[in-house]
Length: 461
Image (tube, rainbow, N blue to C red; front, side, top):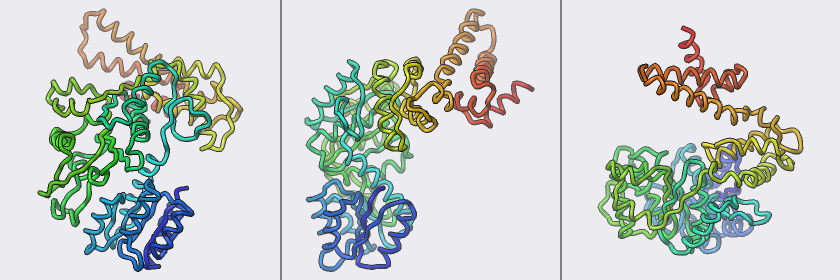
């Protein structure tokens, strides 16, 4: 359970925030002054501190400075009245995670709390490499030659401060690699912020990264610090960098060139010292040819390139990965599963894993939920429709056969007719594999049950 300390000289504020956060499942402590707060922090070591800027005896800024000296990885959200926003800006430069203006909406505070807790988890838990015995944190697992080469590259580049581009398919562990680079660098006591460029709309991503001035756009009621300013001295991980717009690419290029930018709607040039690690599952070289990615930015990002192999190319690691995930979920699910049977392991090794390590992790977790024996067996997998592991290959073979047949006939049929046949064949094969269970068939096909029903109606009409 995440532990949060609320510090405010007004008892009613402490009480209301504590009640709200406790209802969300957090362990909440309170303090009414900065001196007591520091004592609690030294004793209890909370994950997050929510603290007012203006307090008697020792104000929030002074407390923040002391927190960042003694406990640099504890996240701090500052609360401020509108008239003291500039102090909150100063707090951000001292290492606060974020600030929120009073009076605030509980939902808004809760969003900031969840983001800060996530950031705390990212920097709290060191990413270890395979071979670290009895380590219970995050690990990059695998002893295949490809993974040993990845470990070697991370070890060499981490202390250099160089910009790194991590390549790999979705689910192959790009964020873990980025976090390992951070943890083994000289910036490990400074912030680490992860931003998924594909998950945030373009106009929001710009303000998220660079911040904005009051009045920059409708709804910008106060100045906001962006991630680059907030992360000064630390490391920013930009995932899915290939989804960043050309306009934002230009601003990112300037930061890489001279460490400077302007907030949205502002004219003040702000300097920042941030190490940038990026990742993509796209072929940036093709995007450059198509005019979708800046060539000059590409060369700035690609100082060092680390490629993570897909799981299908390192199947010798599946046994070790399965053992690691079983140990991990034994703790989380309060289970005591001792391992996996040879037959079940062979099923895992015979699958292509399009979702890579993330898909394997989810499969192991689901199987463990339903497992009632000491070892994961094929029966555990079947309970969760993991017989679809073989099924996906069967569906793929059905598609391949139809495509081959179409071309043998010199493609006399219209494209749409061939697509229709392919679709119908996939549905029929999925229903066959799942013994006509529509819910499981829809999952196997990656569509909703309603979509499957509509397809069946089309085929029967």
